[in-house]
Length: 575
Image (cartoon, rainbow, N blue to C red; front, side, top):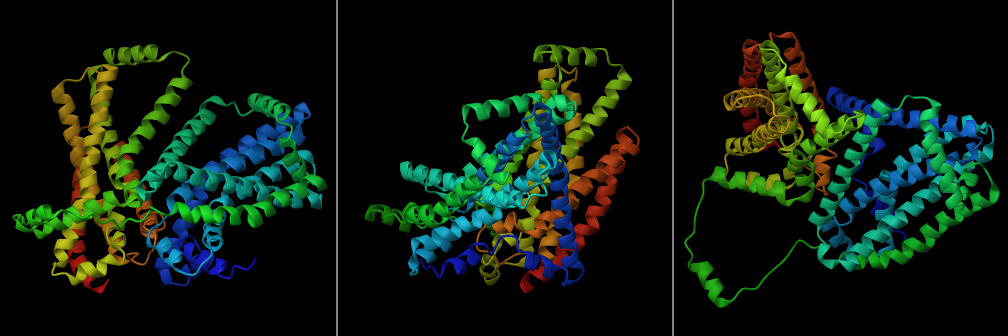
């Protein structure tokens, strides 16, 4: 079966994803390109150290436990299960986000392309971008397994590892797209990008909660000995007893010929049979995704519209409303921006609260009573210190929340090609800059309100002996600190995006997730929050310390904002 357009389509769909060639070229583009690549490397190393270190620790403990029980040959079962879950989870997120990206699919359907070419390119992008995570999980786990089982010197072990990985990825991809298609066929009204992006966002939320809970339990509850792996060892043995077919994957990884051939067959069936069979179904499920809708109205309604008084607003108000609606209407922008203001405190509350309760041997009511006793027995000096630190912590959380949305760092990147239309209108550049600034700064104000509500709820739940005037004073101070620090961050992040906006993108996700400006701004935000914490520790633990912190950031924000507005007004016509 010849599909000459499959590879070009794959390159088009993958154009907004990470490219090694583009990454290497970045080192040849001067100090700016080198700095971008260094920041990307730091981010990758962070995930390798945190998530990778935890995975290696668990696999090592598990391997030792299986060696002690004589069941080391069963270790590939848990490795394959971990890889399958990773591919399934992140594959669902990728498939839901990119199932329909807008005009791209409409153009492909209008071309003389086969369904298998369009669907094959989609599956290929998912396999390369997300299934690679599963491959890393398999490789790391297999090396640990090979060391424990003393089979690293067998060539068939490496062949088995490769073919088993391909089979696991194929099974996961089949399940992902089959479930997606069934869902869209059974519920045709769900053929909307906003719904699929909402599903993807919910999955990310679930992953963050599960990861936070698991990592906290690993840190606080595991004693890092072989005995800690005993429940998992027992679970693996029970799983193999209940489902003996799982050992086929373990035998394939160990280098057994027949199981390896079965893995090859599974992969081949998926590529040459399942993908061509599902391709027409995928194309059919794209019907109804189009965002272009028209609705006829009656003559009477049309006359009402024509004779209706026209209400005009200021240019600033109209532009601000347009920018806000774009953020909330585009699912990718909303999910990666404002929605974080809602889900981030929930994640922190769930992961921190559940971990705290699980770490304690008492029930929740006993814990609350103990906390109340601590506050009742606290001296006046201790209460002053508590109010001081609580105010600064509230401010730090509000700063982080308000600037984690990356709204400022993608101010002009979000416009994409629409920026050229905006520049063609009779709108002054300073109005555009003011709109972008107030839109980004609005989320910093909202973050103060959200954190204030959580703090008031905590005071009521824990019955902290604070008067209404004391709570108001703490929240006002925290809000002022948040806004002063956020001014510096918003100006700095907008500076970055104004200097080098990412205007060439086809998928809106690329303006947020795949924008280096957002990555750089995230590191800057964490750095500024770190500086804020350092100042909090070393400055006087009084209102004078807060005043000094506020003055420092006010002195930085004033000239930074002045120079930014002057630069941005001159820069916009040249973008």
